Length: 139
Length: 405
Ligand code: SF4
Ligand code: SF4
Ligand code: SF4
Ligand code: FES
Image 1 (spheres, each protein chain N blue to C red):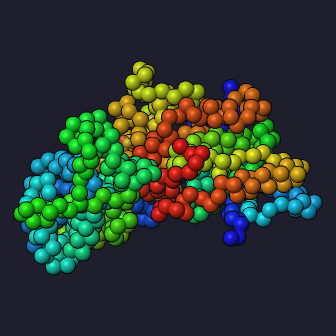
Image 2 (cartoon, each protein chain N blue to C red):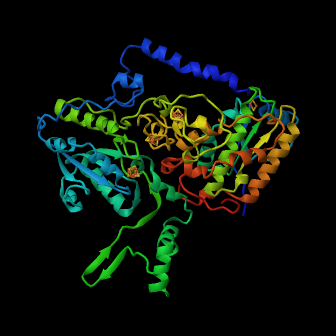
Image 3 (spheres, rainbow over the protein chains, first blue to last red):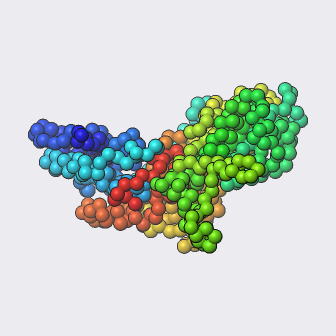
């Protein structure tokens, strides 16, 4: 049997995390290739509806990456984002998902290594959890 | 003063700027109007006036009476009562239409409908969600026999409260087991009278007189338009009289005056913006520091409920009901559904409410667990934000994963 290769959606804010991801690429840091990055202008641009849509379309995990608290390019975007994501996690938990399928992490433009570490860890977590439970139910 | 306060002034100014723009555009609103029967004034004022139907309908229509069917699927009956609430007009509707079926009021039966020719009913109005085989059969039958199908009320349009049962991961089996074996009244009944094997409802039973059947209950509640093709949507739990009048006006204008019907898919009786624009309460754009239930506080009659810490879904709900709940001091629970711009009512409400929690002095150094503690003060967010729209949400059913609830 071939190993389960999860599909992961990673939302990266333009000013920090996307640059961090870019840095990881330029530095040729080795990472699993299970994630697709979607660049947003800020972590606050990630409407909870985007995350739910990703899951409804079969994503096995969703990760939102933004600037560290106090570092958001738009000053307060990540403060909004972290509250929405927390509430969204509660909703996903109520749906019956393992809350580990959704993660929020802060990665700055200079933290290529943190990006690599976060993504590798997240892919491992999702591999452990297995495919999205939504696959089994008609929805 | 918090960081976000400095944006407050701007926000407050925004509606004024919008109004100025609106009055400049004096031409009647042609595109982007969800309901043609709505007057431009009602959009400007953001208040849904009852459509003028004239004192009484002018006798029989020129081309003869139309045929009308009204049906309830998985409904509480409130939608039917709202139609009866049209008061004396309900009698004059008899001048316009032959009511061929209406379980709450007239005698037409399924077999009478089945015998009719396809397309011979002019309008079928269905309330309630689709939760069992009978609901589905009747929806399909009425669709086949009718030219126009109206999805009436929040249950038909969005799933409504019945669709919250989609969150029971075990589906219909778990629901039936619970209702017939676990609730105190049935569990003691089963223990007293059927100690060996509980008696459960059967979908078919061979009685001496012949076979008796009951509908099959489904695992998942669907909306009407997930089951059959729908022409018009009339939201509300139940729809307000003003909303109903706009639906009736569309039909009356068509039947008596040959005015074309609104475009297919129209949501009748809603405004183009959110409920907050209809709500007369003063908005101070305060932050939520503590969540309150209306019974816990002396509700200020003039101040926005969110400003008082009461979770009101007005910002995420489409206008149309003239803020009937918030005027009465109760938060909007979102029965008119989402605004046009979003698909997910729940996510939209969640976003609006989460954004109202204040940024803390130490927000730069605290961890996500602290934020989680704060947001956990909202009890049952899934049930609260999706109270009416579960069947229309992006994820429509519960899943059962180890680690989740
Ligand atoms: S929409 Fe409301 S009033 Fe109508 S059937 Fe559903 S629960 Fe009852
Ligand atoms: S009370 Fe509710 S509907 Fe009214 S302005 Fe406040 S949030 Fe909006
Ligand atoms: S205020 Fe909200 S819950 Fe109340 S009738 Fe209007 S849309 Fe429905
Ligand atoms: S710009 Fe990076 S989180 Fe706002």
